[in-house]
Image (cartoon, rainbow, N blue to C red; front, side, top):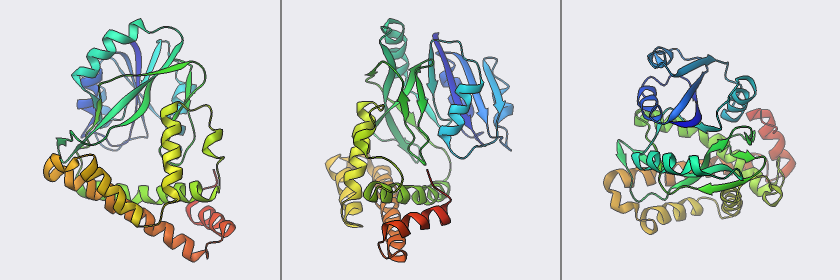
Length: 299
């Protein structure tokens, strides 16, 4: 058992939470569930596990704020802390790698970067290029930035290392749920792309020196993507993922994942960017004020 506390943020996750808890109970000394609170059986299922503590806390607005509240208000005395979503799980290979490597890590290492694998419509995609993200960090050495979406851990001190094996994002909800969720995400993504293109709210990516190299690279890629031609960039992105990254080899699920997440979603985001720019006559100040007034966003 690793000297590790796992934190899960939940809201109505009865479809996922048992699988997640059974998975992480294999290696987590302590499990903390911060519920928003749920109206389904999420907390009842959590109560079946003796090593799970459930805390109710009203949703503050985004995951970064909820996770930071957890770090600041719930005492944690393990050496390591891990973040996982209820619809995610660690592969056996990653569990084995973590059990072998984490106890041997030098004190200079403060965080671990993990590759994220995807499952879609019940099938784990083998050719989807895995994102990487910090999900394990030394207690007291990290905090989330307060981003609208795609929040990232900021390492306060120390080095990061990368593990080889993946954890899997495998959401069991319906395709309609996926479409609704991504429609909501597209508002935030459109704001982020406008911000990256026009520097509306945040400093330039080069000033984010507290981020690890992987996060810096993601932010640079998003800034470059934001400057590409509307709509054509979505088509190019789909082509890259489906053909160059070989998602075509993942069958119907691979095609549908790339279509919905790589083309439809990106087209929807671009349509919202186009609409905002048109309404504001491409005026930077007008765009900023429009976002503040209509999306209640001023970070």
